[in-house]
Image 1 (cartoon, rainbow, N blue to C red):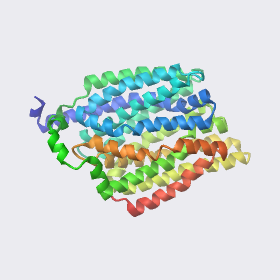
Image 2: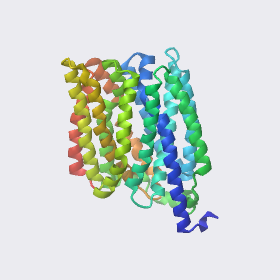
Image 3: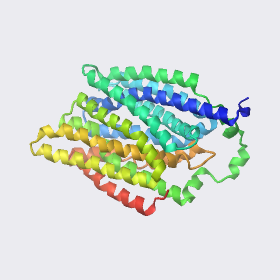
Image 4: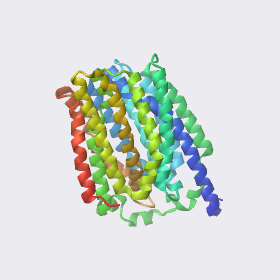
Length: 410
């Protein structure tokens, strides 16, 4: 019986789980690397509109946060492994729908986006909590290691897009399908949750749960939780005004090719891979607040270089554009690497007994900030200028930095 497992046996299971998850993320990164390069340009090609592309990207974002509290509750009840496995059918059907979509069958495009990103949120929420539960100490470093493997995989995926210039985008979706099936098989065979026996929420009586304050009230009554929630909502809103249309905008405004996008993504993924472990260690060392502040300064650099690149390009120095876009993704990666470990450390420690549900509630609320971003970004590109969303994101980050200094605490 797994209730007789001693601490040494539990530690061994946890180490094995983390190594398996490391390999799964490496595989998933390969598929995600291909998907992320072709996703926005694929939508733009089918719809012919940056504004519609922005709206559809927003739909994908909404799907990733709206069901999070329910998914979190199911994850707490049935376990992380079962939830990660349950994401496979959504990924599968979503990618199949995208493969069958066309300019005359936009319904398949919308269905594919919804199903695919449902798979993303089901898998990501449970796997992130799973990392926390299998990490005894140095959680930031463990998140860094797992993300190191993911971004290592995206390098291979993006490189394949770069080399497969003659392939239709649907070919990459099809390859991702095979990767998803492989991930599910590895998870089914090698992931173990034996150590969760004594902590399984199903062993808690319904009466004891009902007498507790709801997770919602706990989050809203705790000043630190509220400060975290407000900051994460602001961050998602400010960054995604510029990022929600970024890849499609490069293609539409500068005529950046899919292969050039792949090259940019390779540099971004390589930088992420190199900085993830130092970023996780830094978060453990200096604390979440300082790490998040560093992240915002790196984010400023990303948007500043992109804005500068436009003015230099408009001045006739067109050869400067692609190198500048590539270079901008190095500080962008550093922003990600200093942000994610701190974010995940904070979100996975909101409630010890119902980790995934509390994570999901914050995820859903912060997602409200995402809702208008695709439309705002697309509207600004169409009616003002391509660089307008980037400028708004740039100045918005200064407000984030002020908020972190004034209200955020470790």
